[in-house]
Image (cartoon, rainbow, N blue to C red):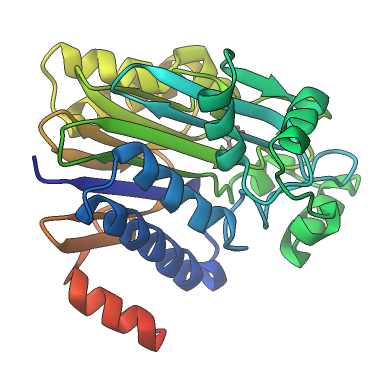
Length: 318
Ligand SMILES: NC(=O)C[C@H](N)C(=O)O
């Protein structure tokens, strides 16, 4: 089986000044994940590696760069799932750690549970020896500004929610195992304790070797209503290609509950799709040692992996 990885850096509206950073961030993440696959690594390791790379990148709404809750704090959700045995782990409303996806992986591997939240997740992180990061270190100027603007009496929170930036990855490895991972700071100025789609199995992501894997982004409450990731896999089980399954599910979410979002999908044959109903979604994929990436509908740049690695070293993308 030829390995494939697809990543996203969030669906929504990406402001001009963030475009370049988002393109570079998804490309870097896809290359990192692909390196794991090329060395014979497992899909679940590849998606974790790719998502960690975007959690560490302040351009995205995950890890460092997460949006802030109503109290001005970072509270994050993350999930990881292994399509081989349907094992998954998730965390919700976690604070003061750099890589929620790593903690989600530990929930999957070191506990009998699938989702730990808030204080319990924090205690578990301590037990696992995950270093605590001061909350301030995860806050960027951009997220603080947005939080403040949302508190103004004439603010338009809808407008600000559009610049979303959840991150995610799906992959298939050389043994035909699929996996997904998703990580987010959620929605700006959300209520304390709000758990979004990302932490919920079937909504923020799903992976099953029998059909494929999907990771989602967009309006969390809408995604949860239609259980978007599992819905896409259902459509693939009925014979749809990843692209048609993704479009059908996104269309359903739009018409049924008025929600917009984006998804990345890989099926068990290694066919993939990156689709969105929002204006933009940053995405990148590597297959057959070729990198493809884009942000706008219809935008698709292609490069060989070697060329992409060379431009990354020089800090160039275009
Ligand atoms: N940026 C996003 O994709 C937001 C995320 N789905 C949430 O609602 O928490």
